Amino acid sequence: MTAPDAPRPDAPALDAPAALSADSPRRTEPPSKLAVIGAGAVGSSVAYAALLRGTARTIALYDVNRTRAHGEVLDLAHGSPLASGATVIGGGDISAVADADVVVITAGAAQKPGQTRLDLAGTNVGILRTLMPQLLEQAPDAVYILVTNPVDVLTVAASRIAGLPAGRVFGSGTVLDTSRLRWKLAQALEVAPSSVHATIIGEHGDSEFGLWSTATVGQVPLRQWRSAAGTCDFTDEILDALSYEVSRAAYEVIAGKGATNLAIGVSAARIVEAVLHDERAVLPVSSVLDGVHGISGVAMSLPSIVGRSGVIRTLDVPLDERERTLLHASADALRTVQEGLGI
Ligand code: NAD
Image 1 (cartoon, rainbow, N blue to C red):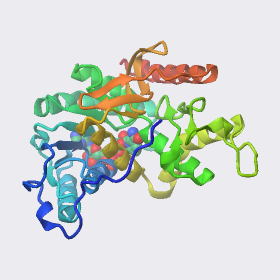
Image 2: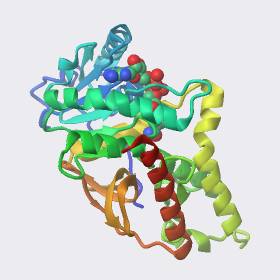
Image 3: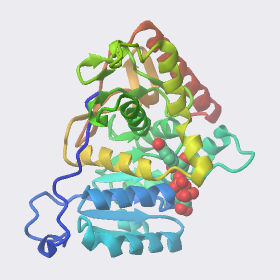
Image 4: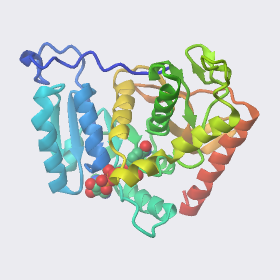
C-alpha cells in the first residue's frame, strides 16, 4: 500500500501571526468543519491531532459529559494560536456539530471488568441508535467515520441506522494497525516507514492479519527481502508472529497507560484529511462489503479509495489461498457478533 504521510505543509510557522486566525483572508482552502463526538481519551486526541496537522478549519467537540467537553475545548483552543489556528468549539450542546463536513464518532462506553466484548458492542450499538439520528439532523451532508469499538460491527449498525449512500459511513478500520505494522517493519529493516508498503486487513481485532503476498519494501517483495548478510528475514513463522504482535499491540499499550489514544488520534486525522481534500488515497478503512471476495453484509478493512464522498471503492486486492481463508474467517467472526446483537 502506498505509504502516506509527510506533515501537512500548510501549518503556519510559529512566528506567522497573520496566518493564525482561521478566518484569515490569506487562507485559500474552502472552509472545512470536523466534528468529533466523544471528548474522552480518543476524541480529544483526534481533535488534538487535527489541530496540530491543520486537518480542518473548524474543529467541534461534543460529549454528553458537558464538563469534560468544555475543559477539552478550552485546553485545545488555548494551544490553537501556536498550531494550525483552527477554530475549536463545542461542549455539551450537540448543535456544535451543525453543518460539519466530517463527523468522527468516538463516543461509547469503555469495557468494564467482567463485561464481554458482546456486552460492550450491545451498549455501544444502543448509544448509536439514539446518537445517529441526532447527528444526522445536525450534519445531514457529512461523511461519518466510526472509531468506537468494536468498530466494524458499529460501522454496520451506523450504516443501517443512517440509511446513507454506501461509503458515506465507514470505520477507521485497520489504518492504526497498519501504521503499527509499518513502524515495526521499518524498525526491523532500518528503512523509512514510508518505504514499507504493507497492510493489515480484516477485522480491527483478533482475527486481523497481514497482507503479505503483495507487501513490498521499496520495490522488493517482502518475502524476497534478504538481509545484508543474505539471510531470509521473513519466513511464514516470522510473518505470523508479526501479525499476532500487531493484533495484540493495543493490549500492551493499555497495560502501560490504561488506554490507546494518541496513535488513533493521528490515524483518524489522516483519514479525515483524505476526505476533506478529496485525496482518493488508498487506506485500509472498514466499510460494509457488498460482494468483494464473496463477502457481504459485514464491515471489514480492505484497501479502499477514500475521497470527498467517503469510501469511493473497495479494492479487489489480490489474495493468495491462505489470505482468502483468513479473510473469510475474519468475516465469519464478525458475522457471529452481529448475529448475537440482532444486526
Ligand atoms: P472514554 O471513556 O475516555 O471516552 C468516551 C466518551 O464518550 C466519554 O467522554 C463519554 O462521556 C462519551 N459518550 C458516551 N456516550 C455519548 C453520547 N451519547 N454522546 C456523546 N458522547 C458520549 O473512551 P476512549 O478511550 O476515548 O475510547 C472511545 C472508544 O474508542 C472506545 O470504544 C475504544 O474502544 C475506541 N477505540 C478505537 C480505536 C480504533 O482503532 N478503532 C482505538 C482506540 C480506542
